[in-house]
Image 1 (tube, each protein chain N blue to C red):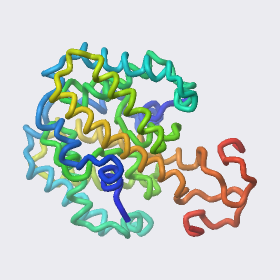
Image 2 (image 1 turned 90 degrees about the vertical axis):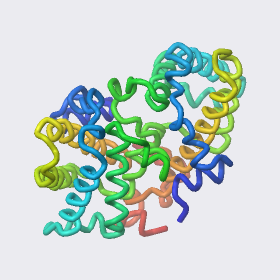
Image 3 (image 1 turned 45 degrees about the horizontal axis):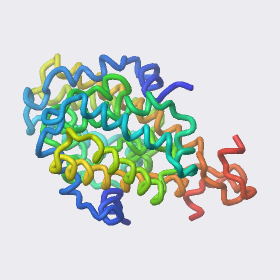
Image 4 (image 1 turned 180 degrees about the horizontal axis):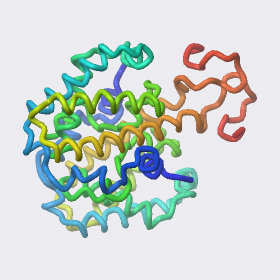
Length: 171
Length: 171
């Protein structure tokens, strides 16, 4: 069985090495906190205004300001800065926390479309950092698609309408 | 609804702040790679030999050497060292990757019992580091119990035996 990270590489076209190139430099030191705030603000402004209703509706139960803060705090923490996210919310647990959202291939591509536009709009981000970040985002988006597909496995969850044996044994 | 991290604090008795005290020091620099290898080796030797069969069986499909490496690489990465885990496996995604395991309250306590013994056995670990690590482990163990309970919510997964509407709307 393919692992989550193997699926992420295959579907995103970004190797594990390229995705985690962000660990060989310190993008937080290079870009600074305000750049990350600007990036996430730009990104979620696009998302909450998306003309594609199916995508916009994924965020219908989210508060924009909260989404922005969650995102830039995670980026800062993951890209060499202080652990802002964990201090406030604990483990990123990316798959677990994306569980309420339908992270399909199509949704990943739409997320990446907005992120590419946001990266291009925030002029403080140099071309090299942009490439590194986009590789990380692309790989991660499809890592979450792979994580999302685990939901359909329905492991160990007894079905309310079937017999008493767990659903996992029925597949 | 209580968040994952609120449940983790309540069930573990360890506040978010105490759990992430590990971020205010660099335990990797203080203890070194070999100490983390020793800790995980000691821990999994106990787990794979556990007299409690129900707990030992949780690891029946795991290879001991692999479990050891996964664990110490994650600890090293999370406690101030190089990102060994992500270079090899990608995002820790703690909840997603624990999905195959039944992380119950009882299993968390048994895991912590063995980890306490392992910490006490590895003499290179000073008392202060031990306290910080145990707070982190205790909070994290119950964070994963909270994550495990999400499986029972069965969010958005259509039941094979029910009507065509998703299970989420049936709860």
